[in-house]
Image 1 (tube, rainbow, N blue to C red):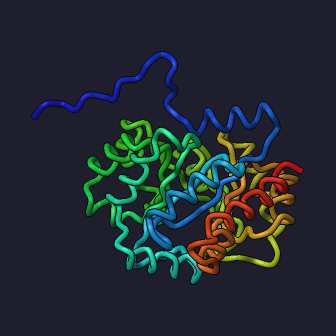
Image 2 (cartoon, rainbow, N blue to C red; image 1 turned 30 degrees about the vertical axis):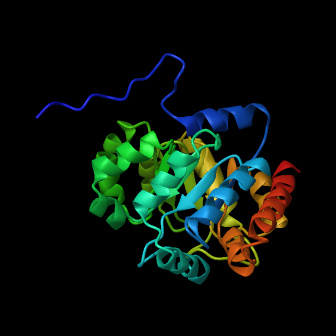
Length: 279
């Protein structure tokens, strides 16, 4: 069997689109805004329009979910969104084909969120190769054990994709250091215990976790789970995070909007969060 050749890298091309973007934002002292949406909700055509609208309205990154039937880390809002997306026929290959079709229009880094089973069923090498060709910059796999991350990271790094790992509020300091050493692109700091979903308030211990992560690693820190309003975004910025990830609040608005209005509704909310991130 012939050894697979590495993708060609020019002198001007870096290994991480995500790192490049965070460096750019750091120079301008901007908090990175990262909306999460579920691919295929309400359908892939609308997902395409929403992605471009988010870019237009100030998103710096987009986290795009691949729907899965047994989402362990997701609350009811995102579970419902995934269920609708599956019913509309969305799967991994269709999500990658969608991104491939937008390569010349969507210029901000896209990070795929997927559970491990769909990737395994697809074939890890095949998935990474196709995702790379479609311009995917990063991958989040919430159910991938830390102990398996190093092996998997080597595979996806071959295709210039960053494997992004999560730190929970309950993560011990020693394990936090292990995660920080293995994550690529940024460290995803989960702000609450439990699953995704909108929250009324944020836990103050998030601030100390941000400080600890910055002491032990040079990786940017982005905070997600439970962030749903401008006040939360302002607080994350004051606490010294490099990015904010907003999921359920976007997904809920997609579910509550008509197909005619959904793109503009999401655009308006993104604009509101952009203003909050810049204050």
